[in-house]
Length: 414
Image (cartoon, rainbow, N blue to C red; front, top):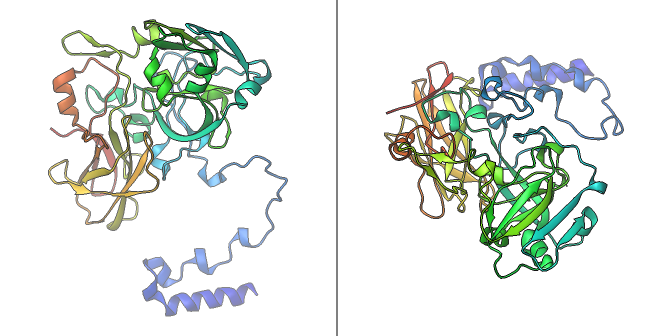
């Protein structure tokens, strides 16, 4: 039976070679003419993998860190493998991590959320209490303010996983922060909130009450399942479009006040330094940004010349991304990319550009336009205004140089 099948496939490929692209297929590729091992034997049953995992052939698709970026892995970061992903939703197990005191492992039965300060009724909620509020499902990106921060002084890290990988895009399920605050009753002089995490660093940030009431969420699920421990299980704050440090994980308390607290993470950290020595105060929103994920240093062109697909992602903390331009020559000429997939407010958008590569070197760039009319700037334009002392909010255009062999490298063009 197997011999008959092989003979049929070999004859079919030989007779219909014109319908199949590629020299190997025209000659009879053993990968299709020969019966493969997985076609000969029974696989695992449904009880063998109670929690699904990727194929073992995808074991290289993992978060990675850069050892020299931080002093200790307990207060460190790893990066989402953007070059290995497509679409707009980040798999839960690949979302980048940023910790200031390691991963807190919290028993949800013992976890509480307190609302105190300038409220009429200070309250303490159990997880079950929060589950009784009306639920919402929203898709948002979350980006660390330091994403691409090593590129302020020039091209540093060779791969979009490292230059842009402190971002993920998820479906969050939770409850409106407005509803929870209204349950406690805001006093007339309530102007700010200060969410606090339950981890050992007791992370806090000041957030204006207008944002808290506009679109913030208290989330307990991501991509349909419970939050992962590294993403704040059992509760985290969602602050759409604003820097990731404000999305407090392991949320345990929200204090309401009449002025900002100016704690460590909004003074000595997460403050944008300018070239004149001054600092920008409270830069929350993440400006429009994009990056080509393939081809890129970790995803070279391996198929040779001919039809080639450029894939990338774009996002804005102020709205949607209706347009992305792509350049093959370092910004001298621009072509409109093809947007594909869902378009949500403050979410990642996927773009593609198809072209025939002739083997000549490329200088690949992408340029995002958001729904407010903002256009992603060059790194040179950013530096002219802000200098190179900051490590935050670097949203300049990224350049990959692709050589005649299809290998890509992080470079800059003047």
